[in-house]
Length: 180
Image (cartoon, rainbow, N blue to C red; front, side, top):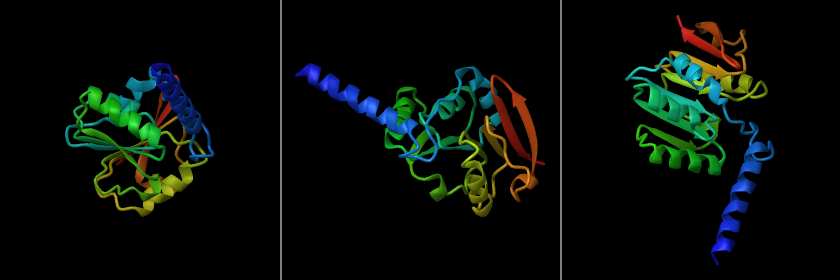
C-alpha cells in the first residue's frame, strides 16, 4: 500500500510542477529566482520594520521567505494563481516560522494593494505592461518602491514617471523604482 501512496504523491507533484511551468494554466510560467541573486533582490527591496511587501506572482515564496529571514519587515503577502505553489509557499512559511508571511490564491488583477509599501515582480515582459497599468489604476497610498527581477519597467507609463529608476547588476538585473 505504501508504494502506491508514494507513487501517487510523486505523480501529483510532477503534474503540478509541469502545470506551473506551462502557460496553459497561468499566463506567467513558474521559473524560480536564481539563488545567487537572492541577497541582491532582498537588499533592493530595502525593507524596514513598517514595510508591507507584496510579491505579485510569488511562486514558491522564495523572495517572501528570504525577506522575512533577512529584514525586519512587518508583513509579506504573496499573490499566486497556482494552488500547488500557494500551498507550497504557505507550508514553507509555516516550517520556517515566518508568521508574518502568507500567500493568497488569487489573480494579481484582483489584489487590493492599499497597504503595500513595496511591490516585487518577477513576471516577464509580456505581463509587465498590464500589471503596471493595474497598479497605476489601483489605490496604493503607501507605495514607495517597486522591484522587478530581470524585466525592466516601461519608462513611459503614468506610474513609472512618478518614480526614480535604478538598475542593479547581479547574475541578472534588478530594476528598482523608488518614489522621489
